Image (cartoon, rainbow, N blue to C red; front, side):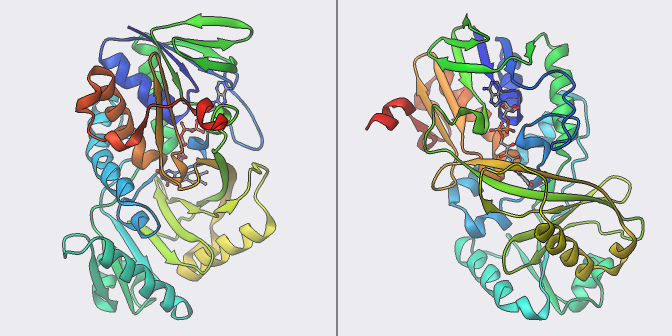
Length: 370
Ligand SMILES: Cc1cc2nc3c(=O)[nH]c(=O)nc-3n(C[C@H](O)[C@H](O)[C@H](O)COP(=O)(O)OP(=O)(O)OC[C@H]3O[C@@H](n4cnc5c(N)ncnc54)[C@H](O)[C@@H]3O)c2cc1C
């Protein structure tokens, strides 16, 4: 079987990897030219995946997401170590969980967060309430700074840049054919069109993220901004979520005292550079968390848009010879391995798909017409 995949972002690469491992011939068509050097998006390209923080947070995210996100997220948590082994890369994958804290002024938000979590995921296995002493033992860098916190022990994180690089290398080594600088203008059953040429295949996969909007009219962009820091004075070992009145603010550790602070969430298609307000809010928040950030260096800022449907849930639209996977919103790394697995199972036998509610048989173009 031959798959032609439009979009070599996160979903396109993971789908390609799944199919390649299952013995398919795979061709990838990516709009970005080879070695894209864009000031706005950094050296790697325009995929939202390059801006992501890489949290795998099916517990913390469920506060504002459906149970489907939690369920697919749990599956992806199990799949990432398998993928890392298949790719022969460690992906900077860590699994010691998330710590949630709040300043005194944001305790009401904290109580609401904890209450929602307890209501949606009852049971002591999901999270642990920490008093000041227990918080200091778990995350010594936060000792004495907060009166209480939550630990979500099952959560993990990885480095999206390492994931994208490892997938790219493994796909090339595995024989996938890359068409770089090849914008796809149309994707249909058994074909896609790029540069005026129609490329035939057995199955076409539309994984263009926001680039698929012409075919998925209900797709929208949700802007997110992040700041990369180098903070030698900070030794935080967990992802830390700090309650904030406007954003779900987090800090994700990277190798060698690197940290990603994120992320704003703004209803906008704007992928332009980070604003002064967002920079001030993110940097003030991180400094309020730990004064070791005072001398941190700002390495880079990034902004991009998350592809999302109205309900912020992912969808798979299918027709014979055509699969469109989109709407991964702020959960691409959390969902994509499970989505690729579900689609691969659906291709073999639709009735055995582990997640039938994901699939919508009608074409999105029909959705537009109705
Ligand atoms: C600030 C921010 C923080 C985030 N943090 C997290 C996080 O911590 N955890 C998490 O799970 N998720 C996170 N995400 C979400 C995650 O990045 C997205 O859900 C994911 O990247 C979506 O994957 P995708 O493959 O659908 O789209 P993308 O990654 O955007 O890839 C789409 C690809 O298609 C290509 N393309 C577009 N149009 C065309 C065309 N016409 N022809 C050919 N190619 C085309 C693009 O160039 C791109 O390479 C974050 C996102 C942002 C913006």
